[in-house]
Image (cartoon, rainbow, N blue to C red; front, side, top):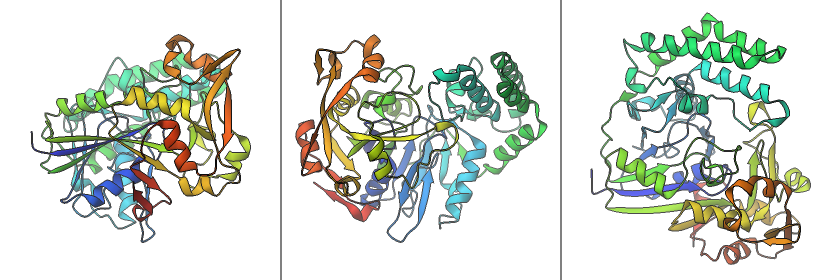
Length: 415
C-alpha cells in the first residue's frame, strides 16, 4: 500500500534510549490518528511513556503512541507475541484511561507466539551458563524466534491446541536436557510440566480475541515503526554473544515495510540516544561509572529479575558513532535525558578508547571477531564538558533535531 507517511524510530544504544517517549511525541504531532507498528522484538520491550497529566505506562507489545486518541497498533510479521503478556498489558493501560486497547490491535498471522515453555528454556539455558551469562530478560523471545518449531499467530483459533502440543513437548525435553545436574535448573525445568501453565496460556489466547489476526495492515495516513532494543544489540552488528535475535537498522525497517506491502510516500528515520550510555544486564559498557549509576537512579528500570543490574556510563561517542553508522542512514537525531545529566556535577563524554598502545575513535575499524573482547578491555578517554547537548552534537558531527529535557512530550524541544 502506498501514499503513507512513515517514520521509523530506532534506538542507537543498548536499549532504554527513550524510543517509547519519542514515538509518543511523534504520534501527538501526527495530523491524523497514527498507526504504530511494532515490527521487531517482543514482550521484553519496556518503553515507558509519561503524559503531562501524570499517567504512566510501560509499553511492551502495544505501540507507545496509544495514549493518542484514535491511535492503533499493528504487530508485524517479525514480532514475537506473548498472549499472556499482551492481555496483561491491555488491562494495565485500561487502568490509566485507555479502555479496550485490544480492539485497536491487529496482528500479522506470521508473527511468532511466545509461550511459557519458551521462557522456561530461556531461563534454564542462562542458569546453565553460570558465570558466562549472555544477558536476557528471561521472556523466551530468542527461543521462540530461533527454535526448530514455531507456532505463529495465524494458528490462534480451533487448531491452536494441536499446534502447541508438539512444541510444548519439545521445549520440556530441551529444558530437562539443558538443566543437567544443576538443582536450580532442574527445579525450573520441572515447572514446565505444570498443567496450570497450559491452562493459563490458552486462557490468554481466548482473552486476546478482541485483537484481530490479519495480514492486511490497517489504513492510516501516518505510520510510525517502533523498534525494540537498540542498534548496539543488533544480531549482526552488536557485541556477540550479548545480542538480540532482531535486526535494528534502517535496512531491517525497510525490509519489514516490504514484508507488509507498505510503500511509503515519504520515509524518515529517527535515531534515539540518551545523554548517557546505559545497559541492562550483561555485556560491555566501557564508560560504566558506579558513581554516575548511583547519581542517576532509574524509576522504571530496577535491578530485578533476569535482566540484572541497570548500569550507567558517560556518553560514549565511540559507541554512538558506531551505532549511527551501522543503523543508518539516520535522518534525524533525538537525545533524551539531557535534564538528568545536566544536573550531575561535572558532566562528561567519552571521545575515544585506549586499548594498549592503540587509540580507538572509530569502532568500525575493529574486526568483528575482536569487538567484544576489546570493548570489555578498553579504557575510555573521558573529558568534562560544560554543555552536554552541544558536546554530543559536536562529537557526533550531527545536529540534534529533538532534545528531551524531561519525560513528557511537552519536555521535548525540536532543534
